[in-house]
Length: 198
Image 1 (cartoon, helix red, strand yellow):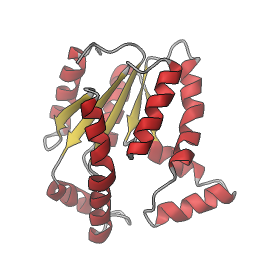
Image 2 (image 1 turned 90 degrees about the horizontal axis):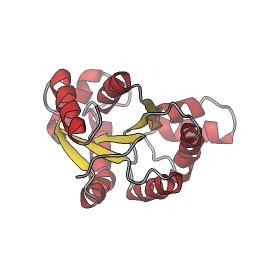
Image 3 (image 1 turned 180 degrees about the vertical axis):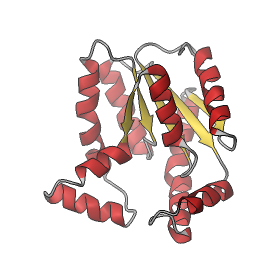
Image 4 (image 1 turned 60 degrees about the vertical axis):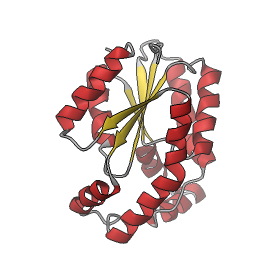
């Protein structure tokens, strides 16, 4: 796997409960990268009282899938802003792309901006059993056992093909996610350093 170019694009994927947001926040602080969380963007968008906002809120409240074009509608203005920011060092995509269709669209967007060779994918690996245990501890309204089972099934069906896609592109780095937050962070930093990110 060759060294990456600047600005860097780090994608963090993994099962629900694998600690993607936690590790993204640590990397954001360490490298002063932008943090592009699809979930946060969608939650912000569903506050609008227009058709999209109302419909998006309904979909998200029942754990439904958000259409990929809408996700890209939220991403693209930020990528455009990053492209023109001379101080831009890199961006962390937290939990996306989540479908093979999204991954291929992202590839096209990055090629368009000249960032096709700047990307690395961190895959935080935890077992389904560990994911279930962690999510039940969070005690959130969308973290009951049946909802978690649906999300884990969705990960297997939709996200595993994305991870295979990035493995074939030789840009996926697997990380053991069943350790302490600090140990995982140090492991990520060590592996990023080998790729030229320090």
